[in-house]
Length: 105
Length: 277
Image 1 (spheres, each protein chain N blue to C red):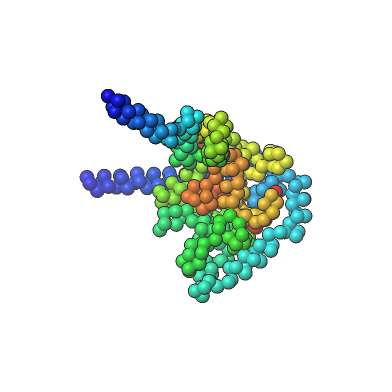
Image 2: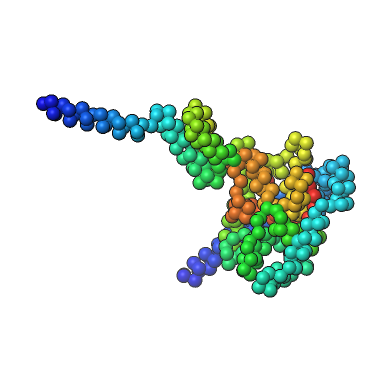
């Protein structure tokens, strides 16, 4: 019984040590998700030939801020970039219908 | 019965092609009439002077500036480059045998073999690559100087972009037209917003130039650049200014845009290179 308790305690301690090395903070997880969503929006706009000028730069700055541990700034930039990507996609879809009305006839 | 069906189908196809061909020419006629109505004192050739055709004060300043035109040196450099043989002994004249008569007015043109719009700048680089030379960068420097030299030899020749009876050429033309009239970028502007619907209006301290005649004087010495640059250098700059990510110079998007844009100025004499604001 004592031997069993000892083995369980050692296993528990090992698990604790192992997981400590792989911990991703909640902030980092949240940023990663925001970044992925923003980059997906940017790529969608790019695939329609409608990427805006600053979206890529915003994402780059977001990563730089995250690398410094400034997750508040990083999240803000990622969200702004996502908004840009989504608006660019909406613009592309809208212009598919509207450009003809501007043509000189 | 089968012969009758084939004949009917053939006539329909010919009619549709005819209607399709009517598209670009109809666009050009409407476009040029639109600007003539906006600026009744300006001749078709006059539109090649851009804002200097619609603003006397700026025109006087421009004429003074052009007396010692900064692009003249670029023409001389372009002349030298053009007449310097490639390593294999051949030269640009082998690719452009009619250069002395002036060739700028015929570009861009449809390349049926490639199925692409061919600009003069791309043709220059294809010439280089065919003769074992590295291609030049597309926005400024040697490519602009070579373009300036060839443009200087084309002065007075009327812009003559041809959209042939080829559905691919028509598709490229329509693609360029769509680009021209589509709003883009965070500022949500199209080329047309400024240069069709607002020419002569102020944008900060500058005047917006009319789209008609815009392509006749490239490559251009732009005061902002303090150097000579190609038309597609300006496309990239304009796109950045409306906060759209620009396309690469000589990308299909910009070549198709140049195809439509230049065709609208058919009949306007080449008057480049020239200086602009």
